[in-house]
Structure formats: structure tokens, C-alpha cells
Image (tube, rainbow, N blue to C red; front, side, top):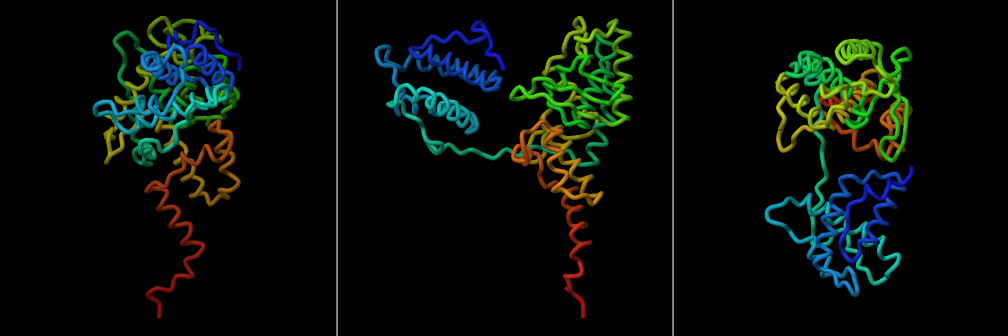
Length: 334
């Protein structure tokens, strides 16, 4: 992937400004978008500007501890993100200056809590799909319900990332072949995603209504157009529609200690697909690589975090093993 133009880089001001620009350019060249991290890098640059010596801008252990110190009541997750960024930057700087301190992954005893997504159960998934059809129309767009409602259904039924969905154009959606062309996604990878016939019909209905309201469907125009001139919907608008659909479906946004996110629809898709395969008694060893490819992962390792043991899946696994090995259990038999 080509390196973004220099104008897209943050305006670094610290004594290590040149090195930080080079670091960010390297990440972009490797395929990382580094958008959120870019803002964090700007914040690190401001910190370094007030703590580094202009004559000898060396990152020492004291500098590391100062940057990673707790700020008010912030969570450990925020500190863990800062630690990850600092480690990446210091590794890069150490290639030129061996004196640079690279903090250990367990510096300051920062606890990295494993994130557990909130996956919709099968019943919740059905209610979510039903509620997405009845999404309220917007004040400025009479087709908001069809556009964003269909978008949410596509996230759940095709496992797309939200950014992939919002970047879809009319040229990317081949309804005749039932294929979505996902271009330049994470790590600049592209893939083709087949979709089911009923989902094709929903997308066709969405396109028809959108074309009536916004005019002709030019190949480069967003498939899910917003009221503002038919441009792309923002991620915040999509997230708001997601929360409205959850409320209409009677699904609590917080269950236990976990809050459901828009990205959890992708996790829910993977969990549902695994459940359906278990019910069909298919060979999971043969099917899981297909799931990884469908999701756009480079291998099974990337897909593992999407495959968690839900209550629905636990019941199906128990049934499957009971059918195969139940004869070995003789508890209660004479």
C-alpha cells in the first residue's frame, strides 16, 4: 500500500518529530491504517516535547514511567494501550540509538484484561433482525429505515466490519451474482463475500428505494447513502441506529459486566455460523478455514477470538458429544 502523503501526518513538534514521522510512515507502508494510534502518537509527541532534552532526545526509563503513570481515575486498558504504543515506538527508535529503553510488556504491573465480546444469542439475533426492519425513519431521510436497517442486517448476517460496510459502493455490490467486493480493508486486504439469496433481495429493495430518493446509482456512490447529499453515513449514525434497534428488540446494552458494541455483530455472526455447523454435524476442521477466509482473516489464529462458547453452542456441543460418546456413560445403569 502506498504511504499516505506527508500532509496526512500529525504535526509533530518534539525533538523526535522526524523519527515519529518515519515511524508512522513505516506503519502505513506495512498496511496498518494507524488512525486512532496516530492521535495517540500525537499525544505522545506532546509529552516528549516537554520531557526530552533537545540536545540529546533519549527515551529513558524515567521518561517511560512518566508517560505510563496513571492519570486520574483512568482504566488499566488505557494505560495498556499507551504501553503498547510506547513499546512500538521505542523498538523503532532503538534501531538507530541502542541506548533507547524498550519497556517490558509488564511494566508498572499494568494488567491487560482479556476482552470478551457480547455475543447475541439465537433468540436475540431473531429479535434484532425483526427490529431492524422497523427502524424509525429520519426527519431528513424517508429511507433511513431501509438503508440503515438493511445495513445492520448485513453486519449481522455477513459478518462485515462496520468500516467495510460504510465504504461499499454500488460497484462493489453485485446483486446478480450475490457477491460483495470488499476492497482495501484491514491490512489493505481485499476479498469477495458471497451472500444468501434472501439478503440479496433485501439489498435490492434498499437500492431501489435509495435510487428513487437520491437519483441514479453511480458506481462510485455509497451503497448506503446518507441524507446529506447521498454521501456516506458516519460510524456514529450507524452506531445510533444500532442502539435504537437493540432497544426496540428488548436487548439490554449491558449484560453483567459486558456492554454490547456494534462490532459484536461480527462476533455474533461467527458464533451463529459455528452453531449452525454443529447442528449440521459437519467437519469443523474443514469448515473453520472457510470461516477465516470469509471474515477476511489471514489464518485461523485471527479467527479464534471470534469463536467463544455461548450458551446456545454449549447445548449443541453437549448433544453432539452425547450422540457420539453417550454409550460410554453408564451412570445409573445396573
